[in-house]
Length: 107
Image (tube, rainbow, N blue to C red; front, side, top):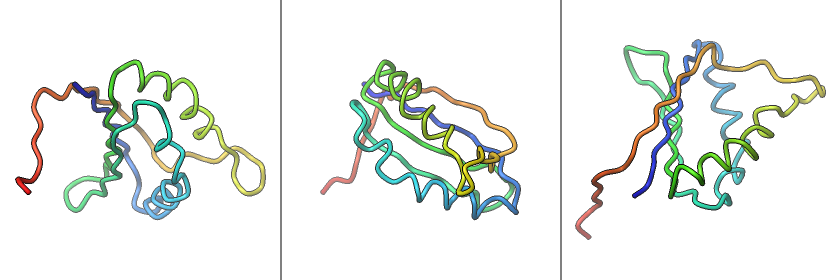
């Protein structure tokens, strides 16, 4: 069964738009990776400043291949002036889960 990785990002209010802009600009970077199944960026609505970056992968090995390759390149990208970009998040935590049951709409 699939594995899920949820990166929990602490994002100050003044950096939310920047974080969302960066994720919008990354379109296509993960979608073509072998074993990739799903991505969602979840914005907090109330009670927290933590965004959730949800990805689902066919296997742990597929996730690791991406994390050690393309993801590192994307996170090391420079800003418009060529200098390394300052992180939009002030902290992060990675949750790793295995999918043991799943369902979808009946039709």
